[in-house]
Length: 405
Ligand code: 3PG
Ligand code: MG
Image 1 (cartoon, rainbow, N blue to C red):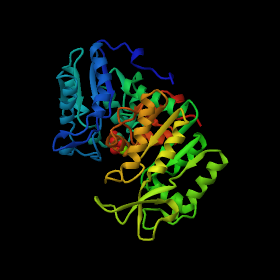
Image 2: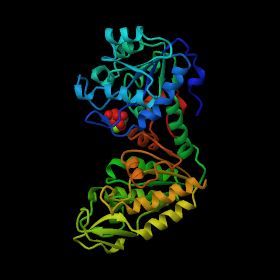
Image 3: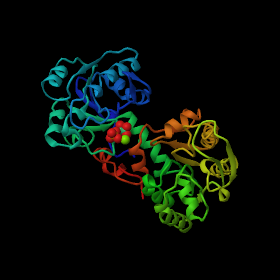
Image 4: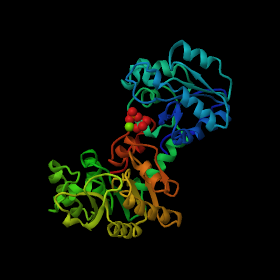
């Protein structure tokens, strides 16, 4: 875990430090609706500023595909960063390379903070173009990568830069990697994974990788339907991936072979459609009528899953257990997440969650703060769990780039 430099290893006073943050936050009509990524990123920025660095913040924002798209400016985010830093000024440059950026950097005094415009306004960013990376590198003396949630992208500001300047991981990068390491790299056993969401297809590699690593694998969400079908249960009109039934069977068999306890909902909540206020029934998983769909795990199945999780020391959580966006189909997710949150609070469990809809589902359950760690990463979290090398981390230090096999 400590095979890369951190802020502790840099002497930054008076130096220009390029900090790659992930400030890709949700913004609606110019208003930031969730500032979590800014809050996680500001620690590194504040620490560098306090140490007398000239702090130059790089980030992408959405997917402008190499063009200047006015709605995808980072300007509102620079304001959000300044607010998060109790009003400390954050200057803004309307380009991340070239004269505009160079002049803005040249005007900086020690301790000042400057945010540069969206790096994805230039094609060279996503192309990991060496020339573009050199233009970025020309603006700084050192590089700090604090964007774990972008580490699965080999882009100029997340990968190439690390090879051009003395580099270190920022505090958020350190925190993310350390949480993942304790969840799956070096976990206290028994370790469980809870995986939900709509489709197996998007999580095949994840499930294949997890059955080899965890002692218990709880599967929920619509992806559980494909597993139920693979075990011969009828799933009515439920969301299901019939072409992946044989793959689900393979994962099921693999779990038996590796003594991974694969837990499927034996009881489910069904309705005629996914609509608020629709009549619901709770029924055993084998008895779903042809014209009904599974929309959540049943309370007894949720309790049984919790009982198994209680036997574990570590849980890694990804995805919702039901159609949580439409109540009451959030009840299974809420019951399980609240139980896990309580176990964490009591010090009996270490739980790390992340990826896609997970933060929204846990926030809806009211337990976002109770889990040991909530990753701000979507794709990067999943790819790390799958055991893939993350280029952004690899560029900082080979050996901690992926979860041990
Ligand atoms: C994310 O929100 O997933 C990260 O900011 C990376 O963005 P991307 O998926 O557009 O690369
Ligand atoms: Mg993404």
